[in-house]
Amino acid sequence: MKTIGLLGGMSWESTVTYYTRINEIVNQKLGGLHSAKIKLASVDFEEIEKCQVANEWEKSGEILGKEALQLEQAGADFLVICTNTMHKVAPQIADYLSIPILHIADATIAELQEEGIKKVALLGTKYTMTQDFYKQKIIESEIEVWIPTEEDIETVNQIIFDELCHGKILSESKAKFIAVIEQAVKAGAEGVILGCTEIGLLIQQMDVTIPVFDTTEIHSQKAVEQALAE
Image (cartoon, rainbow, N blue to C red; front, side, top):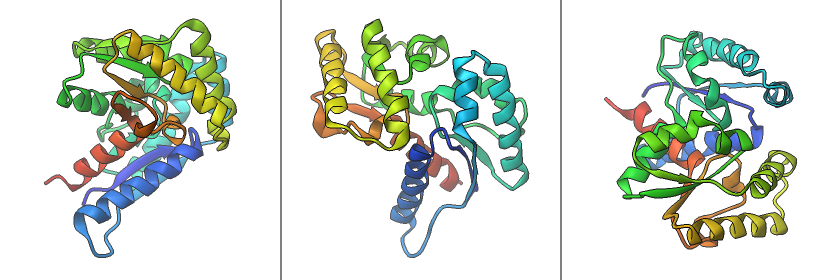
């Protein structure tokens, strides 16, 4: 079994889900008392979020790159960045490493293609929804991307940072997310990417009529596949 390097803390709420799901999936596949071999680095999200707001992406990439290098030095065979948004600096993080990064967008695209999705709604932080580092990968795989209106982008972003990152799960916020997804369905979206690792705390498949692609779950599944591959 390969050792998975988890670069987490962005937020710790979703990192808990990664740790739990990866271990559960390994145990389901191998049985007995098997669990995953994991090295975990958990950063102070306040520091990273301030970099996001100040548009200091290079600084955040440097912080995360140094943490990732420590994971490699501790014996990780590959890296999983436990957040969608900070994949913006994945190329910078990769410069610190000789081990591969399992990219969350690549893992998600593979799932979309398997399901034959041609148009997908993308929900996440405002950075993930509006900037090209994530969307462009999906578009280049010949899948059309729908994003919400500017007003709804702000609403989704606010719920993520002010509520989900603090572990607050509010029914009125779930209703707002479902309303946005319903707009996506009207616009022809055949599926919805929960493109922020915390959204899966709020929205599940039973809440909506189109397939849900929970990036935390997909990323965790792919991490186990890579860890157990010959």
